[in-house]
Image (cartoon, rainbow, N blue to C red; front, top):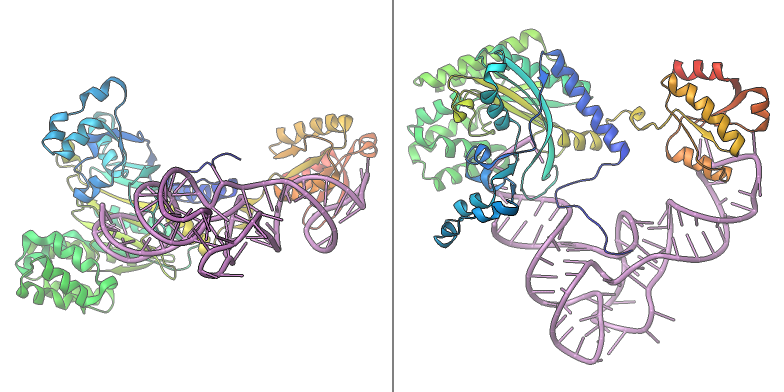
Length: 457
RNA sequence: GUGGUUGUAGCUCAGUUGGUUAGAGCGUCGGAUUGUGGUUCCGAAGGUCGUCGGUUCGAGACCGAUCUUCCACCCCA
């Protein structure tokens, strides 16, 4: 064999059984999305660089895959920028297109571009791959699927409630035994910054306190100090680390804590509404947790922030989401509030694999494999197969009269439920011998009986 | 982008302080067994030791670069 072929880092091939398992996840998500009134759209896998750059912060730009200009466009390279050591500008002149980094920003572009063709509130779902030039790690790939659902054109909180119900329903349907939906509100985080007197440093503060469960109180304090947060402010932040109890109890404590902040109070009111409604409507299996330290999410979240974690497995968040009041504003369309969620299908896949949650039936092969005994028999089998397929029954014929052992082994490998043995005797009787590949039982039956039996299952 | 780690047959891995022809299990293929698979037995094929360069009489082993794997940061699904 020559040089072994390979694929780029952070990418994967999927075998048929894996595709079946992934399809099962996608279908489960789609079913719930449709049920809640979302319609599918698709956008191109690459966008103009200008659409994506600057939308995810500095870190985000670094992780966007760029597509090198080709042909005559190469001449557009801004050599002056290179000489002036302006690498960012030089890079932009080399690559006018880039692979999409998520589905939300392209969706905002889509809404602005098609605003006259849409009715608002517009509810769409979108299941497509995205690409990030990140270092691969456990549950982290360079190419992965996001399954988004968003609503734009309404600031109603009933959508926040719906999204919580959707997280719950999808993951319950997939059979995840234990998972938590964490919820917070950007306005509460703004309130905290305000109460501390460090309004401008909200990002630094939230990024630091988000790491609480990872690096502990001391770690967070250290990071806050490094980010030049005043000692008084840190003293004000500290009580947040100790906050414990039920969602209601934390809510009450936060009400007091944020008493002096209008925006903070607003956040509390929004969150209280969502928690209250969710409690009334009842979740199937999810736990919902108000987590003051939850600050994940892109720079554009302005209201609710969601994150879902599978408990009992070592895996980052499997879903995320939140409200963004001005995403379409970036493309020149003001006053269009949006809220949405995303399922990380690849991580959910890894979790389900680890917990063995995939139904056995997903990896079943054809219903029936005809064993090939020779030319005449093959012709007869093709005739029977034609009738089975007309009835929607998946079947296949072994392509040559190979040794029986080999054919049976093939039937095992492709996980055929049955094999059909058709030799001279069977043809003479216009019947087939049907063998159950699990039990080994054999029965002789007519074609009509065969169709009836296989359709039943 | 920073720091560490990994790479030997299709897969999982041995391979001594640098020394002749690089091994095992599983899988694959053939046979025992030309109308019966998952078991068993016998046999065979399969490797420029990730790649390129260096040190050495001699490199799978040592050094450098690069790619890849996994992990911790950054960030995130």
